[in-house]
View (cartoon, rainbow, N blue to C red):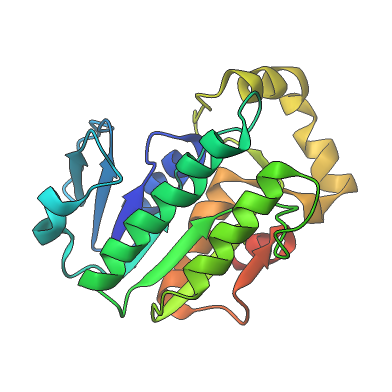
Length: 220
């Protein structure tokens, strides 16, 4: 299986990349982002692109892939709806439309989040925007599209978040992960489990399109 990974330098993307490089099911992984990870691995190819909303310059390099793991995202804290929509919805759909044009038989996996609002009508801004993004991805016509909705994600293997707020949270409560796992196992997961679940779903599919935290843990 050949995988394209967007957001490889983010926390979830780092976990997905690590599992791809370790997996016998993944033959090649291509990262596309504003920067490269610089990891030396024979399975890894990387493209740095300033404007990810315009993939026209690299379209020929995106041909022949079986799956896309879309792990790009930002925190909505301090953002208005217009700016959050531009990054979360517009960018995601722009990338997805380009990939569909090139490889309609591709499996597209989108990392959303627990609490995403599929009705697009709730009071929580980020949940509405994520819900709209999910809904419109499903309309594109890919061979398969899956929405990953993780809750609390514990970073493992030295992986760190670049978001200052999340980094502060992990410093404060990260050591309590074993307690969270014991008390509320359906609401917590790890970067390992998310990455492994992505590979499993891309290779074998899943019984439903929206995968909540408990589904991710089961598949990962």
